Length: 157
Image 1 (cartoon, rainbow, N blue to C red):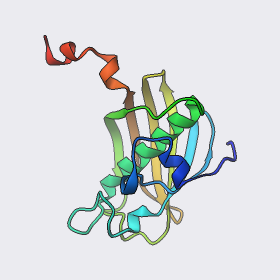
Image 2 (tube, helix red, strand yellow):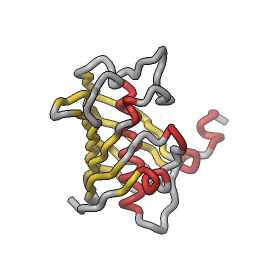
Image 3 (cartoon, rainbow, N blue to C red):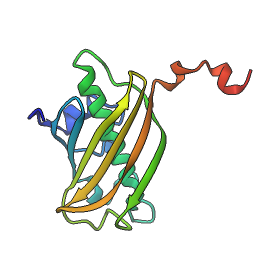
């Protein structure tokens, strides 16, 4: 792994998520294949993903997706700006807890690029805290989806 630490501001400069929707606090290290990040926003009472005062464990998928987004930006290099990405699917997701807001430790997110090209990427991810697995799974990401297919083909025209 490359020993490069990025803070929240540097992360926000590389992904489309801004303000409180930028959920990550640090990139701890990364390589062309893997990224490891830290987040503390799961404990924030104003976390934008909370519903009825709770942050369900499934929201960890968004945390992992942001780790994937910053990984893609880091791999692309300094000249590349943030690219719009969409989770096309998540599979084999396992939730080991019901919620994240009651986790006292910082979240650690690991995303590993399994395969892909410049526009379609498959990652596996894991979210843990204090040495305990919270959730894991795989995610297919499509970058610049509006440029991948003409809108007329999506509409069936």
